[in-house]
Image (tube, rainbow, N blue to C red):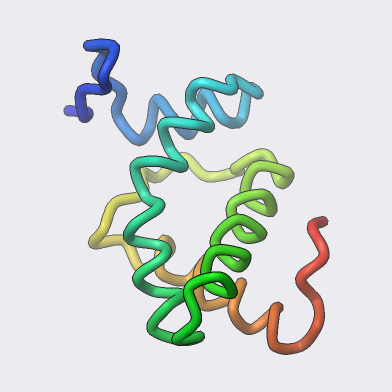
Length: 101
């Protein structure tokens, strides 16, 4: 069970994660858009600054993509792993380790 995109296709989170791991740009875009507002809400909760929160979300997302997404579990709003990405990005930003690996 996935969510239908504007182009009428249905992609599950699992499909998107596999696509991202394979370098599929469309999967990366859909996954980013699907979780952007959720990730922003977490980062804003910690930073209270929208531009800093945006930077953390983008840095965190790039880290996920650059590490080739090595998980087989799906990520949804009830998965603490999704929130963890935002928290770790915030902590990295505070410590000056926001470089993308």
